[in-house]
Amino acid sequence: MPARLTYSALTSLDGFVEDERGTFDWAAPDEEVHAFVNELERPIATHLYGRRMYETMVFWETMDDEHPVMRYAQIWRGAEKVVYSRSLETVSSARTRIEREFDPGAVRQLKETAAGDLGIGGPELAAEAIRAGLVDEFHLFLAPVLVGGGKRALPDGVRLDLELLAERRFSGGFVYLRYRPRA
Image 1 (cartoon, rainbow, N blue to C red):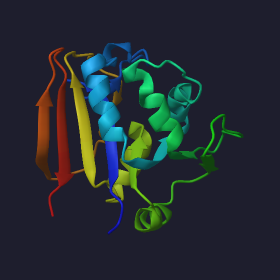
Image 2 (image 1 turned 90 degrees about the horizontal axis):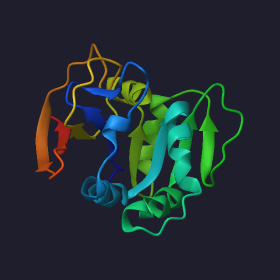
Image 3 (image 1 turned 120 degrees about the vertical axis):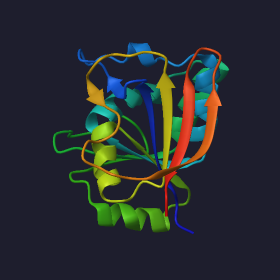
């Protein structure tokens, strides 16, 4: 059975992963949400990132905090990482390789041969995978905030009917929604 490709995003209620200033501090998950995310990320064997998302996530490569929420660092370091970038010359994390172009056929092949599920991070890279019909699940965490503009979590110009698989409400106001494309 092929691996699943999951797009996960922390987004404002109005659908942005960054506000107009390029910040996302308003999306910082509390301990309850972070612990939940850790469990969702545990089965991911390979992360697919664009350069900017990788540069945000590489923080976890050197994080040594033993707080249970911060154990995400162990999960992240244990996974393979593919960074899609035309400009990045080197990576600063183990188990990481650079690909110059996003190739839907190569990602399909990776889904067929991967030892575990795949995660895709970053809205621009995810948009390419969504347009290519590669995303099997969407994990959206809606933050209780409207930011009014910025970088959209989901691409414009795509019509995709989805089936709700799960939902969860968190005490701090976040809501988790898990969808898959309808057959």
